Length: 467
Image (cartoon, rainbow, N blue to C red; front, side, top):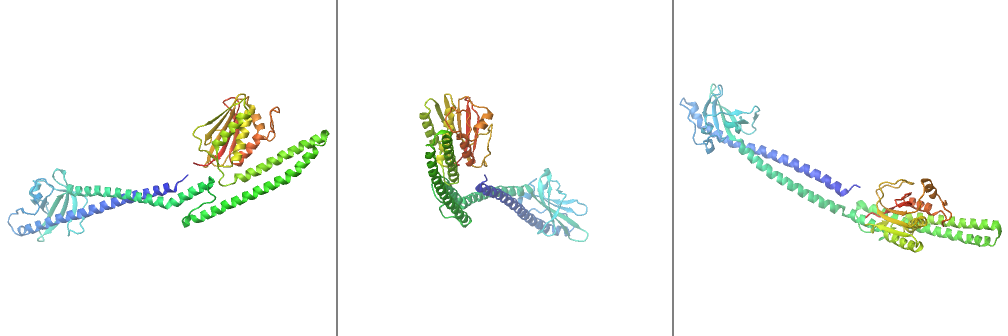
């Protein structure tokens, strides 16, 4: 069965993870762009200082001398990754370079992109001595129509990458914390929003167990209509049951009185005709009793809130049968099944199991075993009726004897109404057919098969209250 809580939490978790992941990617991307712009602005300041320092030298015919004070000592440290060069735009010859470059060269990446806010220069990545990754700012300068120069200023890209990596680590930690907080808040909101449904579920259970006559409590507008309709259905069910019981009682009274008069009169008749009439009157009485009982069962089956603990009923029946059939050893096996409850009337469960135990005692040689199991058997060798969906709870009662048993053909005959395989045994032949009819009425299942004890194993499956 699907869970609304699980469904909402699963979807909220997926969206929370997706949002946190996307937010982390967007934030780190924005930060890298911002960090590159700040890094480029720092290089641009150095480039402007260099242009200012070298402008006078380039306009004169004196030899070029590298500026010494740029406000950044890393341009003096050998192989620091912070370099600058001045080269001829036409020949590419390096005219001046920072002391940190120590005679090496710069290699730019193939792809270049124009800087949006750093004048008319280029900002690219490249490599310096030792294949060290660099961020390079390049600008073309000209003091006349014939003399063009290229000024390049670089910074150590590892410093930039370390800065971005540190931010990414912190950003992902924040996103994880954000996602966890979002999930916790979602879980709280879902539990709070679904709390009325949990209360409604408990109230319905109270009605099913017979502890309440209607669903009580105040509920949100989304489910209040359902609660009202359910209470109307419960009340209508009870009214229908009372009317059915009244009609069955009236019918029983109307039939039994004239039939008793007929039975008394035919007993005074002698001869074959009197005997025949007396037998037919007894048959009529049995049939009336059977169909009236069936009508009562049908009415009780539809009662909402009829619940009967199974173990006490079986225990009581076993004790009674031990007294009736003193020569038989009757064993009751129940393991961790004391909380099983039959979703029906106590009288019906007593009649169902009582018929099976009594029948087993009649045919057993020395012993009868009664077993109460939770759920349904995985396999059945023979099935007379299919049951309702397995979504509801079920329990199984097995009644086995060590008698002579019977063939499959005889099992089919034994299930038919009024059929008796041994006239020497007491009974009317209605017991097993009534059990089968009652089991089907409860959407259960009743089968006969060979028992490991040597006789017959009667398997009765009935609906149980879900625990």
